[in-house]
Amino acid sequence: MPALSGFLWLISYWLIGEVVIYFTALPISSGVIGMLLLCVTLAMRGRVSSSIAAAAQPLIALLAMLIMPGVVGVFFIIGELAGQWSAILIALLLGTLLSVVTTLWLLKRLIKPTHVR
Image 1 (cartoon, helix red, strand yellow):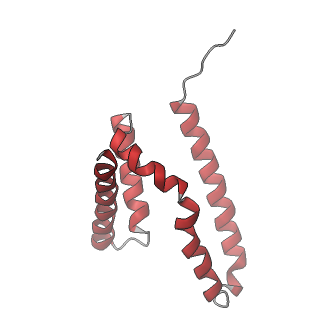
Image 2 (cartoon, helix red, strand yellow):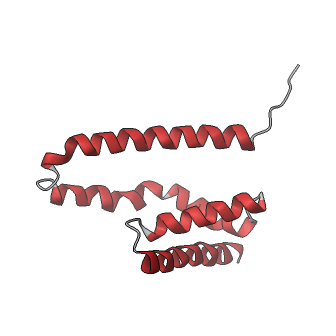
Image 3 (cartoon, one colour):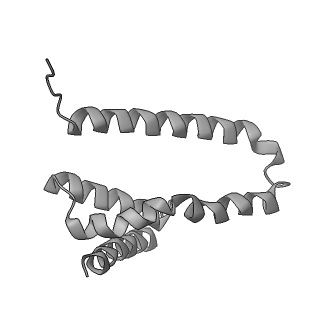
């Protein structure tokens, strides 16, 4: 039952993201907004509840499957993207750099150093 409760929390944050997008008309996915709000909430709490962890673990294993439809969809609009390769390349490089820097910063902040003799 903890996983069901965790899925309810994840869907709730996604729906909150939908509401934020509806009222602000931001050009960002509601899932991204919901994920950022969930991240802020978890950072303020300082821990991840067992129910959210139980719901998120199977989704992490399926992450490649969740990304696949968007990747396949690009092939159907490849003609429209032909003149935008430089912008796409810059976005990919900056996005990768930002995600690596953010991950390293979070690891440094969350993992306490241990002194081994």
